[in-house]
Length: 219
Image (cartoon, rainbow, N blue to C red; front, top):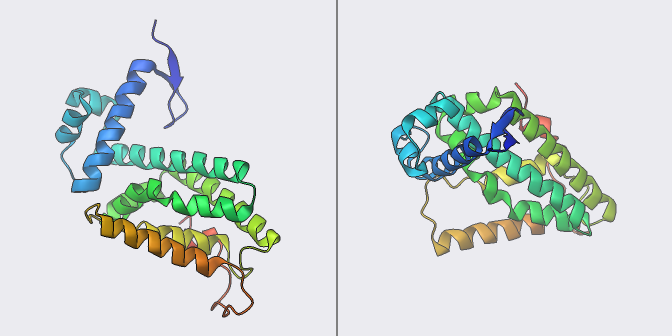
């Protein structure tokens, strides 16, 4: 007998074979959306996933449902990594650095939203994606306050500022995955982390520390 598993999409039981099909479809969609954008043919995604088009549509009845599935999968993975970083690292700064270096995990969801206003609306109105994002922002806020209490992160930075920097790292639309691009991203991350550190001669930042709600409003 095939075991039942829980679906990360809606917390309903899912048979192991159905879960396998879902994971294959999500994996294929990530690759194809990343290279061709959110309007790529659904038939191409089914073919790459090794499933029939009917199987794809039974699990994801339309394109918006598939986009939500991809975004939820990426957010859930990033949230799990954030929780692990907060729990396992010995300092708040180490947890923050680990989170920033892991930002590539969310790149596809952000690129999809940037490529299409309708995708952004779909993700913004999805309660599961919103819940995952809110949980992720809570973890980032905790890490920021821990690092500030240690004296390693400058005090005039908020979790929203970190989230905004996080998004900047993801703004790699369809650039080829080249050595120069990877080096540029690594250098940008190093510059960001250096700017977040406490130092006595640091210039004051304009405005006020940003909260996650200011950077990513619910409405």
